[in-house]
Amino acid sequence: MKKKAEGGNPLKVRILDSEYRIKRKGEEDSYYEKIARYVDTKMRAIADKSSLVSIDKLAILAALRICEEFFRAKEEHEERDRILDKKLEEMAETIQSAIR
Image (cartoon, rainbow, N blue to C red; front, top):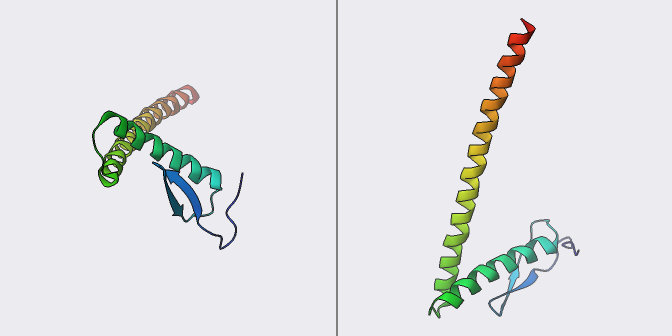
């Protein structure tokens, strides 16, 4: 795992056969390479299923799909938090009742 050098050079990643240089914020290179592979996979999946030629349009559709995944995961996480909070409240009430 390569770590970003202090004040280092941008990391080179490939997405849809094009090279991009990205700045890192202290994370290991492998973190950003993983993200780039994910974006590449999403864009290729859209390109394989459509006749879109424009990289811009592919990028926007991929961004929309990735955001949809993000928001869905966020909603699921928030729902789990609500369920957990309710269970914790119930457990606290049960403990308080048992102590009295």
